[in-house]
Every structure is written in C-alpha cells, then in structure tokens.
Length: 551
Image (tube, rainbow, N blue to C red; front, side, top):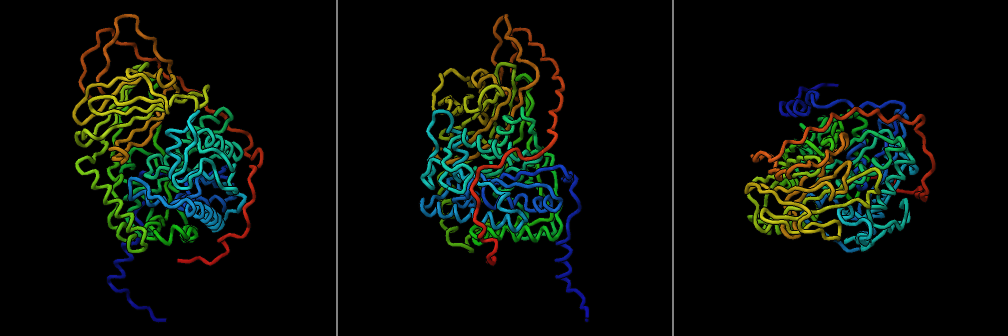
C-alpha cells in the first residue's frame, strides 16, 4: 500500500478538527455502582440531544436508567427558536404527530440500549406546559391545547390517560415517577432554555422534589442546556470538539462534563436520526449536538435567609428571539415549511420596531417582611411595553397549588394589575418604587406570597401578545433565620430600588438576623430500589427501532 502525503488543505482541516484543550470551568461527571439516573425529556429527541452519551455510559456500568417524556412533541419545538408565537397546525395532524414522535422516542431509546420498560410517557401538551405553570391551578379550568384542542392527556399509551392539563396533575405524575424510581441523579432541561416546555419541566421538577424531600428523595439535578437560538457553537457536525455552554451561562454555573467515547458519539448520532420527523427537517441544527462531551449545570439558589439580604443578577442573554440567520437559511433550503416560519419571524420583528428591548440586570433585596425587585433594561421602555413579574411562593406545610401565584403587570409609570391566578388583588397590594428611565422597581410584602420558605421568581417583557424578552425563573431560598419582628417605633421609610441611592431611614436599623445554622444532611435511603411498578400499558414491541434509518 502506498501512502500519499496529505494535501496542505487536508492537513489544515485535520488540525482544525483536533479537540481543544480541556476546559478549566468543568468538573468530570463520574458514575458509580449505586447511582440511578432518571432522564426527564420535555419532548421525544431531548433525551438523545441532552444525554445520549450519559445514557450509554450508565447502561454500560449497569446503572439503572429510566426516561420520562413530558410531552409527545405534538408540534415542532425547534420552530420556537425562530418565532415569538408558535406556528399552529391542524389538530388532527398534531395528534398524529404525537403518536409518530412517541414511536420515534421508542426507536431512539432502543438505539441507546434502553428497553420499552425503561420508558414513561406523560403526554402533556406541547408548547402549553408553561401556560399551565403560569395560570392553571386550583379552580382555574384546565388548559386547552391550541394544537390538539384537548384539555386532558389524550394518549392511551401515556402514564395516566385523562390527566387534566392542570398544575396539580403534572406534579402528581412527576412525583409518582420520581418516587417509584428513586433516582440519585435527575437529568432535566435547563431553566434558561429558550423553549417554553423545557423551562416548565424544570420548574415542575423542582417543586416535585421539594414535595418529596421528606421521603428522603434528594437526587442531584443535572440541568442540561438544549435549545438556544444561537447555540451550540460552532454549528454543524463537530464530533471531535467538546461541548461548551452558552456564553451567557459560562460564569455563574458550575458545569459537570460527561466525556464520550467515539463509539458513543456515533451511536448518539444514530439515536438522533431515529427521530426522523425532526432530523429530516432540521439536520443542519441537530448535527450541532454531536460533540465529544455533554454538559450539565444548574443555577444556584439565591439565598435570602429569613427574607433579608440582597442579590444582583446580570442578564447576559441577548440572543432570545434573535435567530441565527445562517442556520435559518440552511433550514429554509432543506424544508419548505421553514420559509413560512421565516415570513412569520419577519412580520413579528416588524411589529416590534422601536419597541424591542432586553433585560440587563435584576436586583432583589429583602428586609424580612418585604421584597424589593428592580429590573434594568438596555434602554428606556416604550410606553406600549409592559413588564410582568411572577412570584410563586412555596411552603412545605401547604400544597403548592394552594399557595399564592402572584403576577404583577406594570409599566414605568404605574401598576396595571395584580393577580393571584384569576383573582384580582387590591390595587395597593404592591408598591411601585421610583426608579430611573431604564428601570422598573416594585416592593412586595411576603405576606402576599403566603410567607413562603422559597420563592420562584420570573419576569417577561411584552407588547400586547408579542413577547419582547424574558428573564429566567430563579429560586429565592428564604429558609434559615426567622422573619424579624416588625419594629414598634415609627414606620420606616420604603426602601429605594436596589442599586439607587436612598435617604437614611427615620428609625434605628433593624438588627441583622442571626446566622443560619447548618442543617444536617438528609440521610439517603438504605436501598435505592423501586417500591412499586408504574401502572402503564405496555408499548408494542414493533417500533421504528427495527426499521432502516432514513437520512
């Protein structure tokens, strides 16, 4: 055999394809014999995109793995990266797509080494689960899917067919899956993900785990970034490059890295291709997830012991609702529907002329009885744009569905509405704090939130029905020192917005709360084994896993 010298361009390509040096900001994710891994996938294909290599590694080490699909993926979630309002298809076509994507999920799982007994499908509405989180609790009627027109799980192969599209039912299903499997690690979507179902699944999962903490269930959360408009970078197929986090998440989060063997990388690609309906229309995008490693990392909780203290959060994600134009063009050449999505994106962008804006910073402070929240933007807000601040309280002794779920809509000049789900609250329930032209600030009593132990806080900016920007939900941990008693002397002046100069209070300052005592770690159960089998119907053995792959 004759060996020919490499052409200069070929040699350069090989050098460019060489893996970069190891990243200093990651820690290796190592598995042991006692682990049990639950993968919560918002849609069929997210299990492969986020953790296809981790699943293979766990199975090779005889670590039990279960995959739970939140929705059936009734619609194309990738379209959400290019539009502000999701394109809607006919209900009949959507239900057929849900069945198809369930079959594709089975095929991909089989490719990774799982069996049908390792899979659970919940069947909640694609693109509707964040709406359920925000609005559908207690006596509020269930969410009606704009895609399937259903108000309850319509799939007979789901865990609990007929479960209402309501927050309590989702929490019950997630708790059942987690409690039965008793995982030591849960892979779940990242709270900053640009897809609404990804963000919703993270929020529901955190609450479900709080509810199960008394049972000794405290798995490590492995939050996986998946759908962002300008990530992964670089685009296309780069199997020799390690994964890198979105640039706006690379500092605040401690990342864990699972390094994959070459055969695991290639088999992950084969599993992604089993999701035919997605891959055939978006190969240029999905190939970008083929890297030699996978990343996991969650936001840390923000500590305000006893409701006192202050935190500031830089909002560095300026890519929301700003698609990668090069990728957009590639997808438009691959599939005709992408041209219609491009037209919709153009129309939405035109409707927001002179109104577009971005969050740049959040600041939150507390005095033990009130929270003051400040939101700063890249430029002064348009008069037609409104900010909605959502504050959901959590207490271990009150069902989460019964806790207040406060949404405050306001402009720089006035508070427009304060609601607890569908119930209007008094106009003076919250106080707007004077702030700069590029800032909105408000003061909220903790009693309005149910005197919670934890608060889930989110915010969005919108013009009518069009979202302009949003800030990721964050968790405020108020546990620790008790709330300080109200002063008996003259009433203290309301604090100014965080980050602004304030006049000194008229009364003596309240002494700082005592230091938080370290709490003993929750003991792990002696045996991590299933307690009962989930009452789900068997999935037919004949799936697309034994059909030829088309690409």
